[in-house]
Image (cartoon, rainbow, N blue to C red; front, top):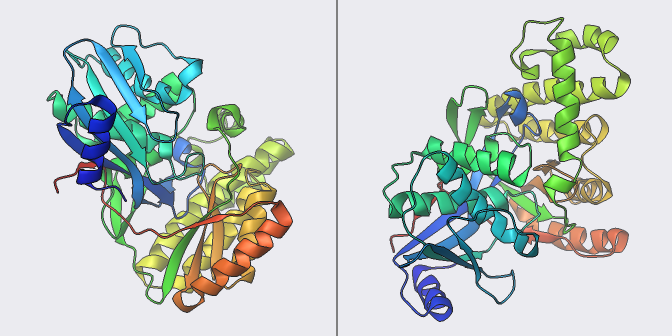
Length: 387
C-alpha cells in the first residue's frame, strides 16, 4: 500500500518537481451477479483496499505527461489536442480516453498535467484495474480543474471510456462501486436504475479470500463482447414475446417457454442471466441474515452457471474453484468477466493458511504456474489521500 510520502518521492524523481495532489482509487470484487450488469440486473460488488494510486501537478503547456510503474521506464506524453489511440503505448490509452471523453462532454481541461501512477493490484485479474485507473484520473482532474463531477458523473464517464474509447461493451457495475464504495460494506446495486442498498459485509468466523489464476487476458480481444452481443440478440428476440426492458425482468418461471423460442446456445446464455439475478437477490438476503452457509451455496451455483451456461470460466478458473472447495472453502466462484482473472472463496479463518499451501501446490502441478492469494479488506471509493 503506497503512502503519500512514497508517492511524493517517486513523483519528484520522475518529473523533477513536487506533486500537488494525491489520490487512491480501489479495485473491486463482485461477490455475485456476474455478466448481468449490462442487462439491468442487480449486482453485489464491494470496493477493495488494493487499487491504483496517483499524484499530479499542473504544467505550463498543453501536454499530458504520464508515468506508470510496471509499464516501462519512460514517461508517455501526448497533447490535449490529439487524443487518438496509440498502439505503441496501449496502457496510456485509458488516460487518453479519459481526456477525450471529458472533452466530448464539454468539460474544459485548460492546461496540461504531469501524472504519476502506481498500483498494488494486478492487471488483467478481473478486479477492474482499468476502471480503477479511469476513475482515479477523472477524480483527479475534476478536483484540480473544478469540474464539479459527482460520483455518478465520474462512474458514467468511466463507463463511456470503456465502451466508446477502449471498445469493451461493459456495464456500469465496476465504475459505480469504485466511485461509491463504502468501508466494510458491499452494495446491492440495481444497474438499471442505479439505486443501491448498502449491506454490511460481516463474515464472522470466515474470511473472503481472493486468488488470481495469473492467466493474462484482455477483455476487448476476448469473448466478452461476443457474450454481450449474444445476449443482446436474445433480448431483441424475446422482446417480441415479453414486455421487458431488460433480460433480468424475466424469471425462472419463464424459462420453459423461452427454451421453445431460442436456440440451445442462446437459451443457456439467457438462463444464466435470469438465474444469476435470482441468486444475487437471495444471496444478499442470506448475508443480511448472517447466513454464511446459504450465501456460500449461491457462490457455488453461480460458478456452475458461469461455467456451463455462460461459458466464461476456463480450465484455470475451474481448477482454482475446485481446489478452493477441496481445501475447505464453504463456497467459491470466479469473479469478474472470466476467461482468467480471479476467484473468490468463503473460508473458515482457521483454515486459510493451510488452504493457501494446498491450493498453490495443487494448482501449480495441474496448470504449470502458481496462483496468487490477496489479503485485502473492503474500502471506500475513489478519494484524495489527505495524510
